[in-house]
Amino acid sequence: MTASLIRTRYAPSPTGYLHVGGLRTALYNYLFAKKAGGKIILRVEDTDRTRLVEDAVPNFIDIFNWLGIEFDEGPRIGGEYGPYVQSERLELYREHLRQLADQGLAYPCFCSAERLQQMRDTQIKSGQPPMYDRACRNLSAEESARRIAQGEAHVWRMAVPDKQLVEVQDLIRGDVSFESSTIDDQVLLKSDGYPTYHLANVIDDHRMKISHVIRGEEWLPSTPKHVLLYKFFNWDLPRFAHLPLLLNPDRSKMSKRSGDVAVEDYRRKGTLPDALINFVALLGWHPSDDREIFSLAELVSEFSLERVNKAGAVFDTTKLAWMNAEYIKRESDEELTSHILPLISESAKSELSERLEFTVATLRGGTEAYQSLADRISELAAPLGETDAEMMALLESAEAASFLKEFTAGIEAIPADTWNRFENLADSFKELAKASGKSYGMKGKTLWMTLRAALTGQPHGPELPKLIGIWGRARTLQQLNTAVHYASQAISE
Image (cartoon, rainbow, N blue to C red; front, side, top):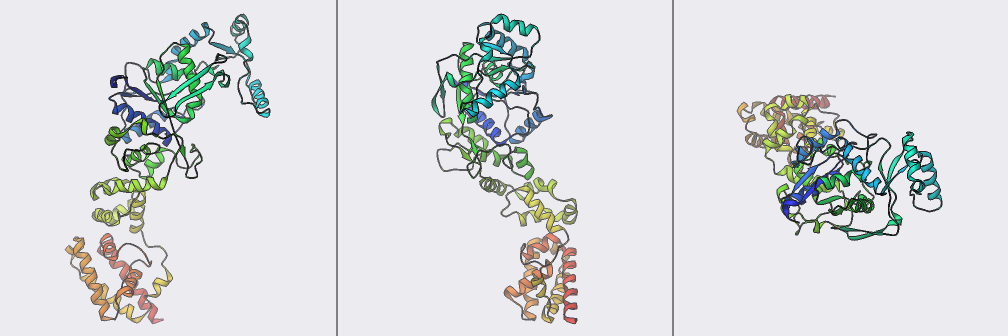
């Protein structure tokens, strides 16, 4: 097949958020098509009217725009094979259903939901796979027509042929065979007039000239039904490729109920789109070498279905956090500041003001997500919480009280312009700390822990010279004066 004829599609159902598994399916379709110079189509499969979620489609489109995945045809884009929303193509499906019925390849089923449930329960109890027992398949054409004319509720099922071997040629799993006796007489058209996935997706894939159907492994058992439908219509088959399952760390199947599986969740937490694309691309596909960091363009160049594994891929959030940190490292301080600005508390923005970019540069090391850095900055700008008792005990001596008074006076004497030159401020802080400490026999760990107790009341935190640059002159002196007052009171009691 020539590159110009390669057409793939991503066909989500608007029944909720975009699952990370759906993102991987869309991404692999995109990478495969773009590498071959082909096209990828976005098609909305909204025939399950009971589960529709308002705004799901605009949300999908917004997320793909955020990720940088551009479709060639689809809703809002257009194309020569539209409309690209299945609810707008109902007459097309009914027309094809009539063709199958006229050939005896589809038949009406009048069984009630209660009868079908009772049938399934009986089959399960006897150890049989639950399948339709074909009760209505034996009705005469005259009786079926009479009952339809009387307005009796019914669905249309496909008439699966007996004693046939249905073969599926899969680009990832090789040839897979199914005995037709194991294939259910699938419902094709529901009683509400809407098609099921099986009928609609086959018709649309053919009409939209889809060359490769790349989808999740969970659709492999349904593929023989689709192969039969292609044969019923006398259409050429597309190439099939079924992607491995996504697994939780305990190797259980990752479902919509498995923690954070919505792309929106990761976007909200500050995962970078490039990092998420990079991470998801490696869930089941491996490049030709040990490289792990790829741009979207590089993924297009490297991708091939031959390197997609059959085995399930573990969704490791630790690996995603590492990868996101790698992408954050590549951002300049200015870029990172602009990205986290909307996530920082308003009080912190006001408190830090012109020192915000310095704060970001000081605290960014090891950042795995925008939100975590924004939270840390907001926390540092907020009033101090409860102090550590052991740390505060370091201030309860005459030497500590005298040292802090001298050190605070020195900090107050630092020229205003030095506070705006952070490197010079750090040097001044260190020199002043050592000089004041020498006067009272304080040095090393005792010196720095005493200062940390005075400034934060906690044993851990940012380097003190950088911390005062983040806080600025007023906040630093406020903290030191509070510590001097505490130390003075402690020795007077």
